[in-house]
Image 1 (cartoon, one colour):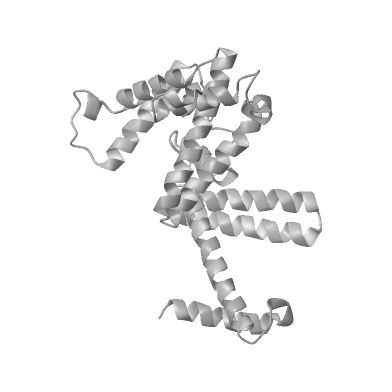
Image 2 (image 1 turned 180 degrees about the vertical axis):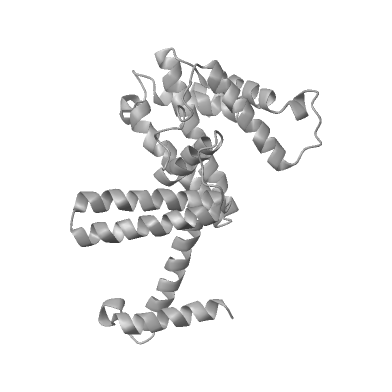
Length: 270
């Protein structure tokens, strides 16, 4: 048994908070942890959130426990740095989210009726968020759509926000027409040889594709993750078929690999 006080702290959150405090101690902590700030830790926070999503996608529940711990550590890390700078601490972060959840769920914690659909609740949530923004003197419709979001997710959020004030295409058909228009402009830019113009038109097409996903009620991030997984799965089947003959993809050609791809695709439908 050691006399180290870390072992006398209650298990769970109190112990995790003490671990982080010790890691950041300017005299006895870890040199790497001491050097970090909000900016340097933010990329790890984003990465850990994606790893949580990945574990859920794969239904890797044992891994998910660990990934959730890694994500929780990020919140604790920011809380400790906030406390050191006098901005906030972990407890104030927790109190703030508790207050927000209670305020935004009057049908659970207040007197409003629970006789609403999930869609009704989503609409009420957006109304509450709009009221909060007004209270913070954020007059612009797009003012608090976070810059640090993945570009595809931010595109959807920007479009949702604009749609709430009527700036939106009426239906998916109109968006598809816009996609055809943007595709034609992309081809024109490609044929014109202007790389900067091509870059701009490609971005425009991606932005409209995000809008189509919103109109079709599809999560574009999830759809693209699934497409990535499908590509990976089928390409590995191509590799396996070639490996069975003692070959690798570089020993093949596009026509053969395309045939093997079609075989892998057909096998999935059996």
